[in-house]
Image (tube, helix red, strand yellow):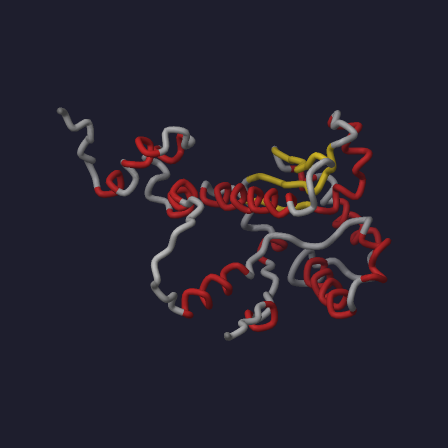
Amino acid sequence: MSDTTTKPSSQSHAEITALPTRHPSLCPPCSDPRYISNSVTKLICQRHSVRAFLPKPIDPQIFEEVLCLSRRRWWNRSGVEKRRVRHLYPKPIDIIEVKWGMLLYGSEGYNVDRNDKKALEHARLRNYEFFDVPVGTIISMHSSLAPVDTMILGMYLQTLCLLLAERGLGTCIAVSVVGYSEVLRKGLGLGGNMVPLTGLVIGWEDEKEHVNWLRIKRDARRECVSFVDE
């Protein structure tokens, strides 16, 4: 009886050597030496659904860390459709959106004079031009799927953005473009059953552009998560 296991040539290979054997359906990057030492690709390849657990307590600090990190969400509310439902938004959300807009178009972002309507409109239209990137995508979902399936698509999109970032690419979730869903359906040949959910802009970041220096302040962890003791 022969042992077919190959001894890894380096420590980085040792961490992932078993993956292609145990999971032959994994995509090539999972065993690509360019990526096996990068935590994002490695964790995405190794992550799986766990349905049996040890009776071991979890350090509360772990929750603090992951909840703080997860606040760095990639989305932003924007677009034409927003105006139709703004009156339905709770007041705090409305105030937050105004603050975001002031930051984005103010001195920390595009640095546009609030009284310069033409310049403001030009900055807003950049969303619909996909910021002139080489790759602009539309993420859509079949109308027969349930609303909860948008959560699954969101997880896919977050994974995609992380992998693109790992490879040095910048991304922007362009929600505003789906305000013209009929235009998108016609231009892209989407079927009537496909619902455009968001745009995704992909390209190499110009780090010299001032607007890319903007970092939106996140809510404190205790403002968005509540712990309930037994």
